[in-house]
Image (tube, rainbow, N blue to C red; front, top):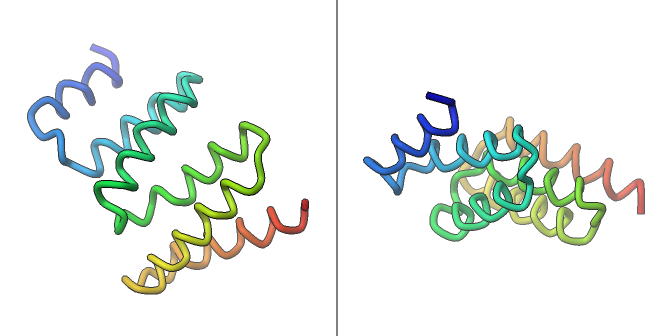
Length: 105
């Protein structure tokens, strides 16, 4: 059974598990199915916006598609969430990736 199959099976038992949904998105990303990974992370963002780990990876996926505005919006949203929680590690990563992307504009 592949990792993808294992995650899908686990999600059948607990479809609301944010970590499993995040892991599934990362697995799709690893297989090259970025659009499916983005779709899953966008649903997770809608259902569990406080799952702060998704913002960095979702922004990076949008960056890989060659866009700048969308990832900047994602990073800014993640920064607001990370400040509110607070999650200083996520806040630092999101600030850094946002500044680096802004330097490319």
